[in-house]
Amino acid sequence: MYKRQLLALCVSTIVASAQAVQISPLDGNSSNDDFAPSLTNHGRTVVTTTDQSGKQQLGSMDRNSGGWSSMSSFSSDVNDGKQVGTAALTPDGQFMIFAAFKHDVSSMGRTDLYSARRANGAWTDIKNLGGQVNSSFYDSQPTLSADGRTLYFASDRPGGQGGTDIYTSTWTGAEWTTARMLPNANSSSEDMSPVIAADGKTFYYSSNRGGGQGGFDIYTGKVDASGLGASRNVGAPINTVADEMFYTSLPNSNQAYFSRTTRDGDWDNYMAVPNPFPGEPVTMVEGIVRDIVTKVPLGSDVTVTDLSTGKNVSRMRSDDATGQYYVTLTPGRVYSITSKRPGYLFHSERYEVPPNAQGQTIKKDIDLVPFSGGGDRLLVYFDYDKDELKSESMPELESVIEMLRDNPSLRVRFEGHTDDQGSDDYNDKLSDRRALAVKSYVTAGGIAASRVEAKGFGKRKPITKGATEDIRAQNRRVEMHVVK
Image 1 (cartoon, rainbow, N blue to C red):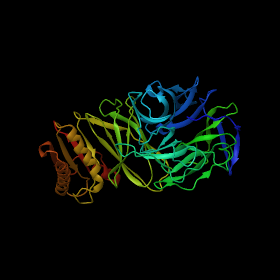
Image 2: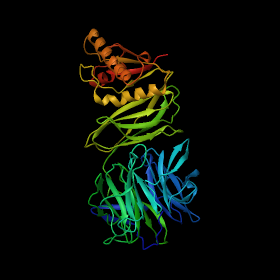
Image 3: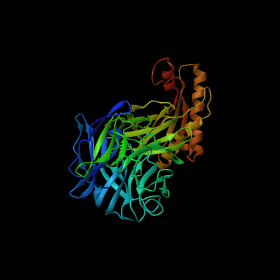
Image 4: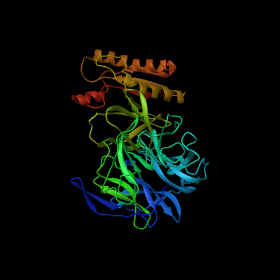
């Protein structure tokens, strides 16, 4: 939501360091302002701000075999403001924070930040972020961390260091915390257009502070809980004597996108290849949530949990129409990704992302079992030859308790299974004890024992044949079945 006259522009292939970086206009630029590209759906969709007859609005383009589709303006209530723009989206494309001037939804100041959720193909549930974030002044240019929990934005409210400063707020699970200036990011000049990379560390912003190459230059540094570390001007060929803003790094790729003023005085979006300042590698998981029987795509809540701490680190959603879900995982943790939808057993998958993991995309469809359709295995863990539940089992079992509380007529049976090693008698007893351990945890959580059964089947019901360790690991499991 920022407009500035041109200084100059150079579009070419320029040598930066030892590598040629090609700067080219992004498809979809018009003769008016086009700026603030925001990527979602793991880079398959770009949401940008475009000027239409003097009114800024949000629109999107989808990647296709020929590049990008034509720009399509949002047809929902999002654009119901005098000026609307600069959006930040979660990786799944289902939650957005955007800025608007005089939006039809209540406003607090000159420009405010709003949230919206995507449901059945439309943006709905538009809300002003409220006084914890917004002020009576200019609050705009949001960016969200990949987990959707940390917000950065620009504001010219009193008490800052310069004309415009960068602020941050954190989602607690119930509300946004009181916005505060991002330590070490601001100067006595104007600092704005913050963008946080998918790794949650690499941070980009623009400033017209002294020592730059033009009006507004792009800077980058690493951010953590204490603030922004040492940052640097990215230099040529990204920065020129023109203005540059909104530097966005496509994760696990060689592409970056940013905005620059043109010789005609408007803003255009550009792509830089290779990206001279990429974020750190991440693991991206994507797929379709479906009904296991009909294969119809399903909208569902998708929760990412850190199994070492038992804490939810992000909440996403699969698309109501397509069932597509997108999750970004940062290195150094063991996660579960859980899909939940009313009328279905939830389903979880485990992902271990080592600290030195290279960037990768994992494609994994999720099939949900309707309550009438049988059972599904649980992510529960035991030490070798033991029946005591390991701590990383607790998030899964809490989901069982939550499901049973939400569906008071539902009854389930936990079935224990082992691999093919050991005697029948040994495996029968071990599997029975493990199933009982799950039942005991659930009943201790307040679920009536009459609604929960437990039975061990030893090694008699393998889900796959073979003697490799991977196959044996698949056969060692506890399943949850609906009792009719």
